[in-house]
Image (cartoon, rainbow, N blue to C red; front, side):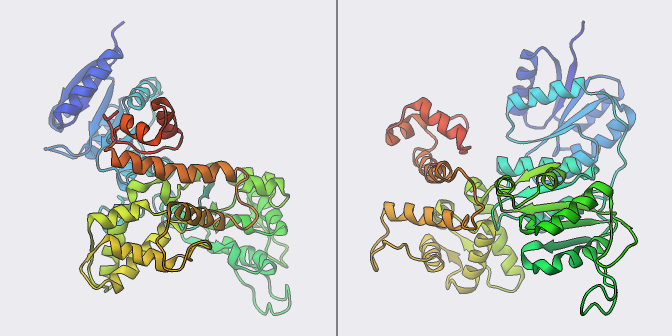
Length: 482
């Protein structure tokens, strides 16, 4: 039996060589080219069982090829790989009919697994092309190219053709509403309204009226009929932020809407059809809330159809420099002085704990844009602003330098303060240890330029132990350095 043939198009010779060798060792026949024209000619001639293409090539954008390939040969799967690893690229690739999108640098084992799935997948009809997402960098809804963010981009892209309920979980300031808006803006309901309601910001006695509306005379002060958020969001998306703060009686009514697809307004008798997509978000551990009897388990499973976890900023350290520059540029666009960061400033930002996550970083950048007297922001300016914004540790001596022990204590206090609502994680010991251990190992690897043998010696750890901790803590390392 003739093995499947994989057509590879990438203008980078080293990428073509790596893919050719890896695919060949896995038993596939491989044909490689550095341009789109040759790839299209092979497709027209009926060659190949699978296409792997880069996005940026010298003669044509690889994304533009996908619809043509799918129209001519609907059974021919296309896998897209790109160094332009943004949400826009992932969405475009998926919406144009790509089987999978892989950001560069990619893991060869993952790519080979994708190849196997693509060759085994049944043929699908050519999808209808939706309106194009915007390209400009300033219009990017989410910033970051870390592995954690790439997974979120791919999840959002896969959901653009679905209408599933999504639960977003993440600490305060991680960007939960931005993800919800991206799901709406690139989804099937993009032409409908996006309506957001924060459960923590509404008095308990008003939540049902806010969600479902009320009839005239339903309660004292209800002089006219009022539409609730469900009706306001008809045809679009309803974003239920801080869903963990919803009172039990409102949880019961929301569960009925999800089960029956209809609701009644407060004081009303006529059922109203619910035509919305629901996206919920919380910083709480809802499973712990269920155990405490504070959240309905059946409602949780109705909302948690597609879970998305947003990582805290300290788990995506490599995204801090582009985020900081983005916020400085946005501050300049808003009329604040233009500023730039030097390397010492970037290192200080990457070493911080960020209990307020991306929101805290944005506030810091805007403050520095307004107050820093020099055009270039240095590490000392970062230290001064962070010290000013943070409460002093209880054990710190007045005016004295912060010791390592005090720095660790400050980080632990910040972590505990972020979970002081009584509904935090039940594994606080392990999580605090991990939060202290992660920056220690990351900074040691940075000091040894990724050399794990030297890092293990400096830390007093066995090399295999260090490797396991790097894997378990998901610490990014320089590839090719052991």
